[in-house]
Length: 139
Image: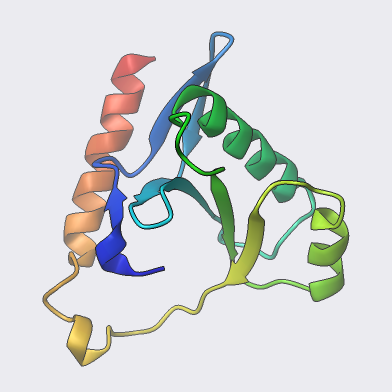
């Protein structure tokens, strides 16, 4: 995904309300070139099959509640600490939605070319605290 082709929602989590229940998407992007929403669910553990059901729910909800009739179907990405290929394959095999699973690696420091262009840990923590407070106040 080309970073210049995305718009990131201003909040760390995107709130959805479905039949009076609250749901929070970790990250919601809109890809300008693909003309579709991209839902990202962040997990700090290994992939579990139930993650695909949650993502399917989010993708369907975004398609029904946010997608414009000219937009392409929403894409779902689950980022996990690690994954086992067969477990992912079985969880996604019969799913008819564009959902993928990937892993991430944590590093001690950012590569030089990214330093200064991304927020600091302190800035992210402050923003997260503000969003959590806002969510708590809404409840």
